[in-house]
Amino acid sequence: MAVTHPLLRVWTHRNYAYYIGGMTPNLATLWMQRVGLGWLAWELTESPIWLGVVAAADLAPMLFLAPLAGVVTDRGDPLRQQRICVAVEILQALALGVFTLLGLMTIELLFALSLVLGFVHPFASTSRHAIVPATVPRDIFSTAVALDSALFNASRFLGPALAGLIIPFYGAGGTFIVNAIGCSIFFWALFQVDLVPPKRSRERRSVWSDVTASTTYIRGHVGIAVLFVLLAVISTFARPLQDMLPGFSGQVFDKGAVGLAWLTSSMGIGAMTSAIWIAARGRVAGLTYSVVLGCLGLALSIAGFVATSNLYVASLFSALCGFTMNSMSTSVQALVQSTVDDNMRGRVMAFYTLIYRGTPAIGALLVGGLAEFAGLRWAFAAVAVICLLAWLLVLGKRRAMKGALEKA
Image (tube, rainbow, N blue to C red):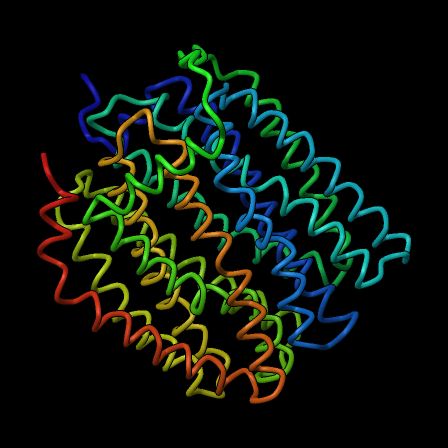
């Protein structure tokens, strides 16, 4: 009997199965490493601003390199690019683990090693967005994208939960060594993927002309332009919440690594649930409203999170934050990937990646600096208000966005 449900059909495609199957354990170990980085930065400094600086080191290079990474992806072989990126990630994780376990780690060295990974992320992300469309037929593409997001967010549950078990016994260094193993698994899987390198134009163009063409395309598209503006606001101000969870656990709830695992895992569960829901739908129709309603839900969830002093109530709101934030980002990605022209995919998705992973670096510094003086709760209360204002601004544009993004 033929497999008809799109959520199952994607796994019948060999390249997709190897790529996503190999990447999934690596995503979990990457989240373990991220939790370890945040906890180690807090242990070394007990400073919200340093939490923001370390998070920015991982994210800020995206602001400068994403457009270049998109051009490189559109001109070259995304699979080869991904293999090189994962090789560097293995070396970076090993360096983090060795320096930490030997007691040689300093906050400055932690910042520098985080910065290395920050330079790799733009090229890894743009190549990933170009590889997934090549592994499945177009009719199940929105499901493939959403399932990719679901597994990413499943790792946000599993990774922090495992980190919460490892850190009390082996410290943050243990999470770095485990990530080196996870990266190695993905590296092996990438060599099992067999994709024909895409045909590229031999026309000689400057990098700047390619970047300019993509920005003109984005500005001229009613749906994509509004989605990117809204995503920029949410990514800048709301996304840093997950980077500040070590501060909430240590300073607000006084629960240490165990509390951090509760908060981060809860956020991952919520995000995973929303992505599975979108993947099971198997269609693009209705995702525009998912973005708009997700923005309102995120504002209310953050407000509830900062209003409580109980860790377990906060974990519930953390899950709601994860659900609403991911329903927005996954819907945006599925809508853009389904709408964008193939010859623009790498460059347009580079701007998606720039916004989704780069602007939180700015936000981490802004919100971290505000939290240093006003406290974590007041800083994110202000973020809740900003999200509410963003929802009000986009509410009237929802019909025009739907018409431009959800065409058959």
